[in-house]
Length: 259
Image 1 (cartoon, one colour):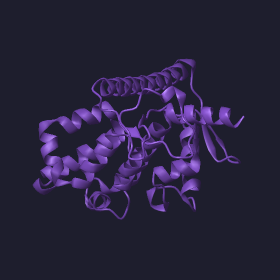
Image 2 (cartoon, rainbow, N blue to C red):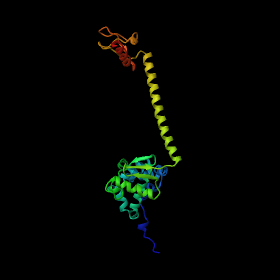
Image 3 (cartoon, helix red, strand yellow):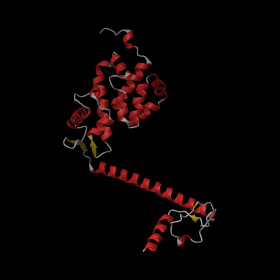
Image 4 (cartoon, rainbow, N blue to C red):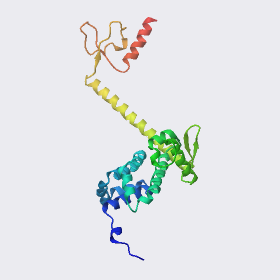
């Protein structure tokens, strides 16, 4: 066999980073990409290709639309791939693999997804693969191929424009547990905020730092507010301490007087 020339055996650091980043997007999971991005040599060399760096970080953060946008035909990254002598013939296959991974990962947390919203979030256009006349048709075509190849367990509802995923019981329980955990976290945050607000109000009252309001002339006197005044007005009326119950009590007293 004829020995290849030295020129075809030499690869620059730019080429190595390009190959590693694109192949990583096409084959590695999020943990693998994190390891790749945090490696010292790769982190420094990725600065040579900012668009590839942004695509990797977007995929790592689950921002799949931003990741696919960096691979659009009009971008410099796609142009670099097409100009590479070793990579150019594999570009359509690699872009398709990355696109499919983004679709699968996007649908993973959901039981049902609106196709129009999904196409918009994933930035599906005629340049990202597929032959559909718009983003939704192109996305439907891509999802159909994934279902036929066994990459996704889902059903497309063309009438409603939704994609319904099918999960086993274990995965479904994990999703429900995750939703319940987030709900409990939100409830806990609200409880802590309410307790802190109550404690602050109590401390302000003990220190005499309450804010008073002057009752209007047409307001009926509030018997429950007697003795709680913090001063007197220029017209001789008492300042009544204002709190979250004052307006409700006033309304009740006015109603009883009118009756």
